[in-house]
Image 1: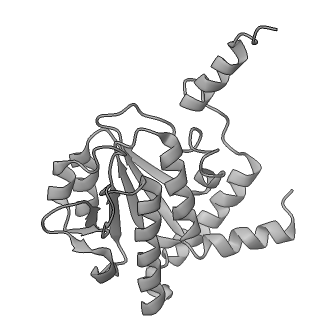
Image 2: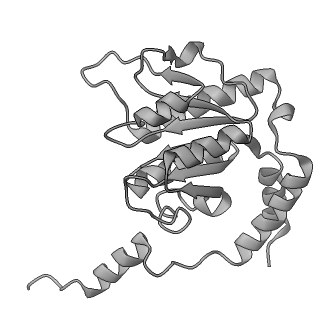
Length: 223
């Protein structure tokens, strides 16, 4: 049975959730994905999209649970096997697509406008970045200024910086316009209470389940 304090926290978090979505394209390491999920939760963004076109799929709730410090339990996910299907669907739903890439039309993050309520922030593979298709489909492209020998940051660091800038702009403009609709936040609160009572089990065949099986069958070191 949840305590009054726990229920109050669930209410506060659910009713602070905001519109928008973070989309991860072909992220290979679910630890990186989990770190991004933790940042989404911290900045009150409820939705995460995952594209598995060129990489092996994983269960975002189960496989990312440890890396996300269990925040994957409190987020909503949508997945797609192709970039075109995911981004095309978001465009049809009225989202503005903002890609992060080193591209000729990219503007620096510090001068970029990220104030659309229905915004989709696109982040790519740890090594290749976003695909040419994703960048082409984006409405705008932003980049982080790089002054070192390497022209990129870790995926989760990039996501944290972009989400932090978006959160700053939203606070300046007033958070009320960015909140999920009241009915959706109320339904989300009810789902949060259910999730607390019945967290999802580890799924057979998930990456974390397979890893646990390997550990159980690993031979002990020689004496």
